[in-house]
Amino acid sequence: MTNNQREIGPNRTRNRVELIGFLGSDPETFRTGKGHIVTNLSVATTNENAASEADATDWHRVVCWNKIGELAADFCKGTHIAVVGRLQYRPYSGDTKHKRAEIIAFEIIQLSRIVRPDTAKDRNEGRNDADDDGPVSNTELTPF
Image (cartoon, rainbow, N blue to C red; front, top):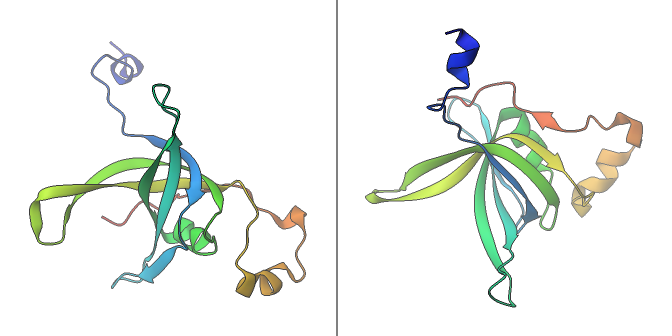
């Protein structure tokens, strides 16, 4: 059996999440004690329920580290984004019985051009659409 056959065998697993949604609030950005940038996002997606006429909104906590965190810090409430990452469960503070799910982003794409009013003028001076770098991928691993 070759290495490639082992990699695609029936026991292979994958932890990958893909979301397309809207930010429900402005990002929360901070630095860790080691200087890493972390940005937390609250992303809303619509769960289209065929059994009911009303669609349900699902809320997702997305954590963006380092360069992706820097990019996400400039988003604002209502921004349409696509996120690719992995699902992680962490205990609530001081509560070992209950865990919360969060998505650790390793790619994020801004699908709409909403810009915070306080940064729009400064960011767009001397800039044109040709300067757009496109999607950002986290080539630096999450620091843990």
